[in-house]
Length: 67
Image 1: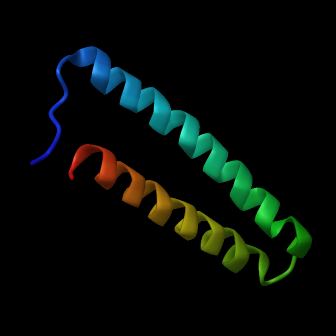
Image 2: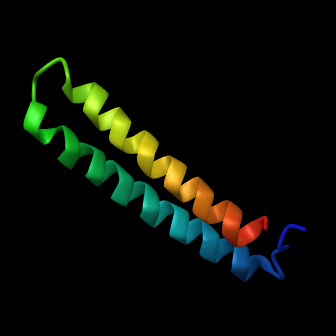
């Protein structure tokens, strides 16, 4: 059974956490691709890092709010 948000404050907190996580993910993607700057592998490495980070975040949110 999903955990329902008890009020707008809970939803606002989640939104703030998500915005912070997005910035962290984007920085991690840039760092991952830095070693390949200007090369054809840079986007692949960056998107791979972003994908992995998104998968982990999704699993965390499912565990926290769905299960």
